[in-house]
Amino acid sequence: MKNKVITISREFGSGGRTIGKKTAKRLGIACYDSELIQKTAEESGFDAQYIQDAGEYAPSGLFANLSNRAFGPTNEDYLWKIQYQMISRLAEEGPCVIVGRCADYILKGKADCLRAFIHADLAFRAQRIVNVYGEREQSPEQRIKDKDRRRAAYHRFYTDMKWGHAQNYDITLNSGTLGIDHCVDLLVMLYEQGSFAGKDGNA
Image 1 (cartoon, helix red, strand yellow):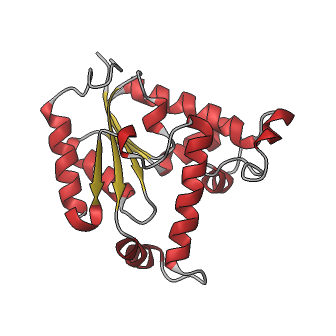
Image 2: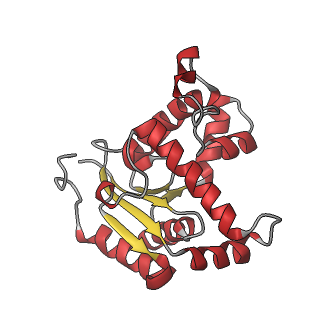
C-alpha cells in the first residue's frame, strides 16, 4: 500500500506554505518545505541559501535559448536530480505533506497522492506578503508576478506541465475567498476520507 501524501503547489503569497504546515499538524504527519532545502544542502554540498534562491528557478539562459542544455547539466539540473530522489524517498518513508518543489509531478505513480494548488487574487496576496515578509523596494505586486513567472518556468522546464493549470491537480483552492483555515479543513477532510488511488491510474 502506497503512503498517502498531500502535495501543495501555490502562487506566491497565497499561504500555501502555511496551509501545508497546518494540514500536516492537524493530521499528525510530517511536512516538508524548508526542510527540503536543508536536506538538499546536506546531500549536494551546495549552500542552503543558494539552493533556496535557485531551487524553484529554471536554469539561467532558459528564457533566451533552451539549447543551452546541450552544453551539459547545470547546477540546477544536479539539484533537480537530488530533489527528485529525496522527495521520492520521503514519500516511501511515510505519509506526509510536501510543499512545492514539483512534488506533484515527482510522486505521480509513486504515492497515494492528493495534489492541491493554492491560489488567490493579486490584492489578497500583495497584502499578505507585506504582512509576512515586510515592505521591500520592489512593489508587492511586482514581487508576486516575478516569483510566479519563475516558478511557472521552472515547473514547465522540468516537468513539461503547465504550472497552475487546474487539470494537473486534484483540487484547487482560493485561499483569499475560502480563508487559510477553511482550506486546511478541506484538505484534512479529503485526506481522512480515504485513498486517492485509482483516480488517474497512478496506483
